[in-house]
Amino acid sequence: MNAGAAILWGLRRDLALAMRSRAEIAIVLVFFLLVTSLFPLGLDPDPVLLSKIAPGIAWVAALLASLLGLPRLFAGDHADGSLEQIALAAAPLPALVAGKVLAHWVATSLPLVLLAPLVGIQFGLEPVSTGILVATLLLGTPVLAWLGAIGAALTLGARGGAALLALLVLPLAVPVLVFGAGAVESSRAGLGAQAHLSLLAAGAILSTVFGPFVTALAVRISFE
Amino acid sequence: MNGAAAVGEDRLEVEDLACAAGIRILFDGVGFTLGPGQWIRLRGPNGCGKSTLLRALAGLGRPVGGTVRWRGAPTSDTREQWHAAFAYQGHLPACKDGLSAAENLHWQLALDGEASSPARLRELLGRVGIERQARLAYQRLSAGQRRRLGLARLVALHRPLWLLDEPTTALDADGQALFGELLDAHLAAGGLAICATHLDLPVGAAAIPLELGGRRGA
Image (cartoon, rainbow over all chains, first blue to last red; front, top):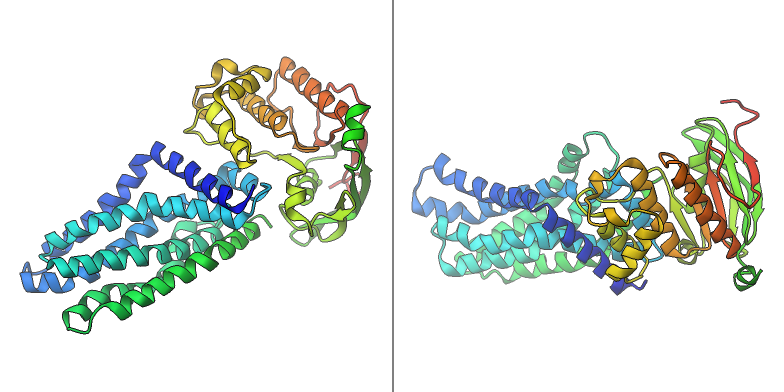
């Protein structure tokens, strides 16, 4: 099987499986909305303050929500032996893994991106800032997905894998968080968000190019 | 034999293979040559490394020594061709609880690049006697029916070499007879197989015995 067919297999299979466990995906989305909704309740409901902290809160919530769904990515396949057969398939493993991560991103991160305007309205963000927030999430969540995929593959079979995964991935996600949340602030200050968006896009490209190979290697290591 | 001539160059050569669990050597000096139509019955006490040997051959886990050659080429150098040469069936089913028997088979075959029509899936499930369970969720199948689903995958993949770990566990008498027929047909068509098992398999073709762990008694 060539790389294209392998990516398609991973994507279609994992999306089909995700459709069977919609509740798990709904939990990620509800978590995202709940966390963002808690801040106005816990803080002073001052419109100026809220619109100032909105991008940061949306980003932290997106980061935590993406962590929540990560253990699903490989752990289930590892436990029932599917990952063995995937690793033994006569197809390039990086491509199979890429399809799985793409499906994971479509199922858990893309909805967050689409829900972000709702958060913008909630916090009284002006439309331009909301647009930038959506753009940063669109470019930043693939980086988070790949960092998470590498972490998830590395923690396969480890006891307390989910907690370990969070400890492993969160520090690495800090740059994404800084540039993601900083973009809106920078555009408000009149500096434009282009530099931030370019850096996030570079990160997205870099992680998408190298992520599959690193993740595939981590999956192979998990069987040794 | 016609089939043997068609895949005449299929040959598995294992030389001086050694595997370890942690720092303990499970076995060493294992060597054999397997040609078309031959199969190995792998035996030994629990914990002697039967599963480890099969996994090491498949490439899941690294042996500490020795070489494995398929058609004369070391398997570690030609990973994709090697992966296309064998079907591995371990203790784990590689099936999803939420999917039906037919859907599980569909995705397994698709991973091999084989598109499967509903009719083809029904035919395959029929051959292993679980046609009526095609739409049943995997988690509701009995242990024996799950094994039969695994056999359906083996038959459908058309791989020259079968690496099977305890293939007849949980199968009833009919199921074991079915497995024997399938393995015989596979061997008659020039296939190769290595089966780790404690049970006597109802296979017509004589097996090459391979005993692990005899001298250590571990």
